[in-house]
Each structure stands twice: as C-alpha cells, then as structure tokens.
Image 1 (spheres, helix red, strand yellow):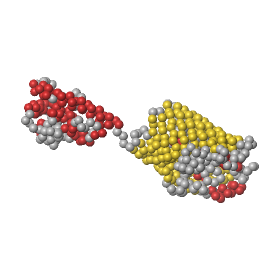
Image 2 (spheres, one colour; image 1 turned 90 degrees about the horizontal axis):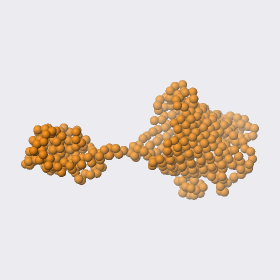
Image 3 (cartoon, one colour; image 1 turned 180 degrees about the vertical axis):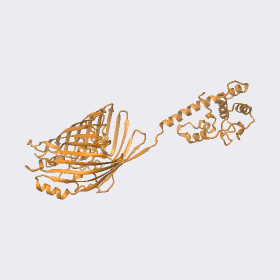
Image 4 (tube, helix red, strand yellow; image 1 turned 180 degrees about the horizontal axis):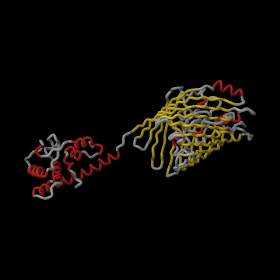
Amino acid sequence: MKPFQPVLLAPAALALLAPGATGAAELNLTGINRYASDEQITSLSQLSDVRPSDWAYQALRNLSERYGCMAGYPSGSSKGARAMSRYEAAALLNACLDRISDSTDDLRKLMAEFARELSILKSRVEGLEARVGGLTAQQFSTTTKLSIDANMVIGGNSFLGSDAPKVMESRSNHGAISFNYDLRINLDTSFNGNDLLRTRLRAGNFDRASNSFYGAGPTRLSQLEASFEEEGGANVVGIDRLYYQFPLGNFTFTLGARVEQDDMLAMYPSVYPNSSVLDMFTMAGTPVAYDLNIGPGAGLWWKAGPLSVSVNYIAQDAANANPDEGGIGTQSSRASTTVQLGYQQPQWALALVYSAIQQDVAPYSTNFLVSSLEQRGLFHTVGLSGYWQPVSSGWLPSISAGAEVTQFDYSQQASNVDGRNARTAAAWSVGLQWLDVLAAGNSAGLAFGQAPHATSLVSGEGVNDANWMWEWWYKWQVSDAISVTPALFYLSRPMGQDTPDGQSFNQLGALVKTQFRF
C-alpha cells in the first residue's frame, strides 16, 4: 500500500495542511480523532458544496462511483474553503489511484492536471505525520503524587542505676507512659518526568520539654526517628521539606529552602531501616558526619555506574540576615559541608564521607560532649560506612556498619573553652536486619554501638566518656499500608563522663509503633 493514505480526503485534515497551519502546537488532535470516527459518504453527489460545472468534476465523479473511492463527511458537505479546492480534488484523485489497476485517458489527464497538488499534499502529509508523532512522544503533563506516613507511638521510659538523685529526677519528670503521633505528608511534583519538586508537611505532638522519645530528659540519645513537634507547639503543621532536584547528564542538582543532608546524596551507605526505633541508628554509624542537618542548602552529585561523588552545603540559620545570628557562610550559620565518595553494588556498598560542621549541628552525643559541640568552631569528621545484604531472605541478616572520628577546631570567638573540652571524638554502630521472620513480609532487627563521645581532651588529660546503646524490634506487616512494631532500647551510661564517679545511670525504653504508609 502507498504511504499516501485516503485519510487525505478529510477536508478538516486538509485544513491542517494549509500553509498557515504549520506549528505542531496548533494541531487539532481532537478534530482529527472526531473525523476518524465519523461515518463516511460513498458518492460525490452527496457533497452539497461542490459545483459540477468543471470537466474535472465529471471525471472524478465517474472514477469515484466506478471504483468506490469516495470518502467525506456524513453531513453532505466537504467542508472545504471553496466549493471544491484543487487540493480536495487531488486528494480524491489520490484515493482513487490506490484502487485503479489500469490507466485511462481521463485518469492520465487528471494526473497531469493535479500533479503539482498531488506532490504538495504528499509532502505536507508526511510532515504532519512527523509532527503528530513528535507531539505524542514529547507530551508530558505536570503530575503531583501524594504520599502519607503516619506513626502512632505508645510507650515509656524507665531510669535505673546507683545515681539516686538523677534516677529520681528523671522518673519524676519523664517517667510516664505517653501516646504520641508523627504525621508526614509528601507532595512530589514532576514537570518533565525526570525532575522532582518535593514539599513535605509535618506535624506531631512529642513534647519537647518532657518527652524522652523526643530527646527531653537526661539525654538526647533516646530520641526516636518517628518523633516530631513543630517549634510552634503540638499539632502545628509546618513545612518540613521544600526543594527542587533535576538531572543534567551524569549530574543531579538540588536546591532547596528546606532540604536535608541525605536528600542530596547519590547513595546512602546503610540498609538498616530508617524507620526502626532510635534516630541515631539511622545515621549509618556516623552521626556527626551524617548529621542530617536541615535548612536552606544546595548540592550536586555525579554518578557513573556504581561510582558516585556527592557534595552539599546546608545552613540551618540561612534565613536570618544578621551575621551574628545566621546567614550563609558566617560563623553563626550552623552550617555543614559534606563530601561523599560512594561505591554501590546490588548486594553491598561502601562510602567514605567528610563533613565540616559548625556548632549546634551534630544532633546526638553523650552529655559530656554536648558542651564541646555547642562551642563556636569548625569540627572535621571523617567516616566510613557500608552494608552487605544476602540475595534472599533467610537466617543470614543484612549488615550495616559505620564508624567515624572527629577533630575539634575551636574558633577565637568560642566561650568557656577549657581543658575539659574535647579535642577528638568517635562513634560507631552496627545494625542487623532479618527479612520474612515468622511470616512473609515481617522483619526483625537489632542495633548496637556507641554514640559520639570524647576520646581526648584539650588539656591532654584522660577521659572516660564511653557509653553503649542497643535496640531490638520486630515489625509485623499487617497489610501493604499498615505495620505494627514493638521495640525495646537500652542506654548504658548515656551521660558519659558526666556520670558521677563510682555510680551508674541507665535508661530502658519500651514502645509499640503503628505505622500507616500509603
């Protein structure tokens, strides 16, 4: 069959081929589709706007009725700009050519008469087909996807040890059972199918002053991953994320008014679930390097095969134009700069990370180290993290582990820096997860390690800031969208060197978390 199809006979389609209708954006696809579904006429005499005075009309009529090659609108009108344009006549002639096997004098004469128009129509239809194909391939509607992550947590903390005053104070102020929630609403928008505009709304009611699950009480280390409250108070909805991310070749760029450090990393070197129990165990064993700083920031990563390089900068107080209280690139920015070199395979990954952070950025440490992390300065952290996971579920768990060391470089503006401040610090953790435990879809895990703690002091004196952390959990996947996770955690000596000599202080937490994710 010839590529020049009888669809050319549609006067509406011919109108699209006119010289004025040259842009692909002007194509009336709805009209073309409607034409394709209309009932076709079968005789030239059914057209009410064609004058039969020309010889070409009679010749075309004879051909169309003899060979049944007439096609048009069921309304009895050819819809042409004139009674019957030469282009319409040429289109009818072309349709008849597909059905005629012999050549007559009338046919040869008609072909000669309309040779120019036949050539023009053919080239225009080929152009139209190319434009329609391009338009179909390139069209994309801006889409926004809504996802919700809601967590309800009921539980409490028990405080133990021989440091009676601290134990009694903690029980009195933070020892009750509480029932709290954390709600996250993600709106992910794409404008071309490859980019991402993320807006996250978040609300919660984990009281900042009294709830140990939100880091209140004797130590910050008991803060859960699923705990949150806006600075405005309980049940206040705020903007938790607002950033735009787009690829350019092997690079991906991110810019946001509120973006988190891990949003701008090409890979994260841990498969231990980020929705387990204690927040510190979600930081790949390097909670100073992967501090998950959040605020205005920008970053980019390059990725080629398994290898990736990521660089990002975040300043928590960039919205404050007072250089003594915030801004970008000031000593008061509360900023972090992170560089990550990663290598990732389907079953394992490894990442080397360097972070330079300012005061009040690192979220977790022993009580003794807190005073050092709050001093003005630039603290340099190097960490190594990685994971391995089996091909299929079984008795072998996935293993995620990491460790880091930190060097403290206090600025001249730092206040109250003395021999008790840390010169170096360290942290590490290991997380294990088993899949399909007791039933398909269920999982179990445990993690252990040491929170950031001082390993040497400015004075050069010895330091005993050691601590231990553990967590155990079992996740029951009730349905695709609902899970229930009972969990325990235990903190041994979370105050570090601030624990009185010869005494002990420990914390035991128990909770049940119900998660709705859809």
